[in-house]
Image 1 (cartoon, helix red, strand yellow):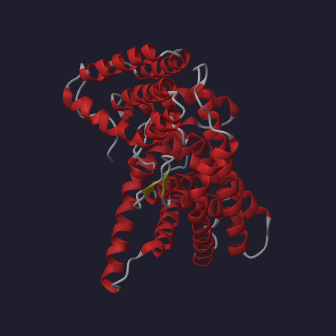
Image 2 (cartoon, rainbow over the protein chains, first blue to last red):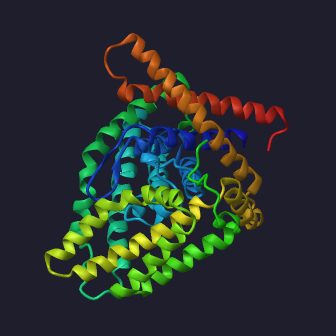
Amino acid sequence: MERNLTHIALFAALIAVLGLVPKIDLVSGVPITAQSMGIMLCGTVLGARRGALAVLLFLALVALGLPLLSGGRGGIGVFMGPSMGYLVGFPIAAFVTGLIVEKWQGPIAVAAFAGAVIGGIVVLSGCGIVGFRVYSVLIAEGVADAKTFTWAQAVAAASPFIIGDVIKAGLAAGITRGLARVRPASVLSRS
Amino acid sequence: MLTLTSPVETAFHRLPAGVKLGAVALGSVLALQVTSLAGVGLLLAGLAAAYLSQGVVFARAAGRQISGLWPVVAVILVWHGWTGAWAAGAVVSGRMIFAIGLATLATMTTRLEAMLMLAERALQPLARLGINPKAIALAMALVIRFTPVLLDKAAQLVQAWRARSPRRAGARIVLPVALAALDDAEQVAEALRARGGL
């Protein structure tokens, strides 16, 4: 019980630390950072349930006013911006990533890469795309002549991140394998 | 650790956190009901007045926080302006700026302790589902304490790398940082157990 709690808390802190790596802003207003690699690592190292809880804990502290999101952003306002789909998708992505690493008993690097790609890229981008579309419909509600994102435009807004994300998934897989080698008992997704 | 709370003491700081969060929720719903340019202008003027009433320094700090939105606003305006629907674009981006600006006002004027207390109270009903609200509060405290600790360790590791190599550390530094997080987690768990556990 104590171990679960401290692992969840320390990995929430790890997501924050990875968000402080320098970022590049895209036109759609969503920054690229190593933070999404932190989300992947929560799943690959902690497993589905604990990984998702670590991400939820991180998001709760962001909402309470800590500037832990990439670029030093935080507060309730970030959940009201166009990238809110990604924030909602973070814990789901960690859960799916962790589930794949737990269920697939193949080599950990392969399982972690597959988990990070499916959870951290496919599921997360899916949430981001739905978020873009829902946000644009919500914000334009009732305004005459207002335009909303079509699905194709939402996909286009999310796609620039995917190349970087594949690199991050590869890195997350390598890091997970390294951790499993030096601290096999601490990699909770496989113990 | 640094928070987003404004060091400038304002009248809003004295309001209870719950009231402010309620106002944010209500204000955001209200903003979605306003469909005219004049209405949105009125909302934004009101918000600007609320900020400016607490001093120029405070308003400027808020402006810096909200200004990160400019690329999104630019895209919305240009996209609508392309087909001559400038007014609709202005209403849509005005609504977004109002909702985010209002939330920023609540975040900037509520201390972290007040937010944590509110969260703890909001989590109380979870006790009935067998989830210990105290454990969640402890986990939050651990994150607040260990984020700067882990940042320090990362900075030390980067410096050690620089002493050995002319190249940039890059992603290679993430493995030892994650390892530090794992080891800290094991040690803190042992310390908690030694003190009687959760």
